[in-house]
Length: 86
Image: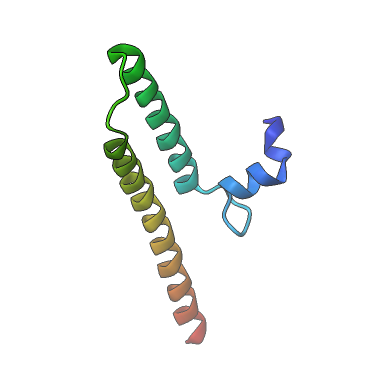
């Protein structure tokens, strides 16, 4: 992937250590799917759907994914600190 060499894209989808973040990648997929869903609804129904509901859904799903990612990073960091202290 040629764009992967660009610093912004790499930092957007990577953790601090440079590994690809599955949570951030999934968040991008959820946002793209939500945009596609709204586009399909507009084309199909010929009217704008309730964007508050779409925003709530997207925020909850993305927030959950990010919280799981941060929670596991925190647990890993705590376990590494406790194992290095022994």
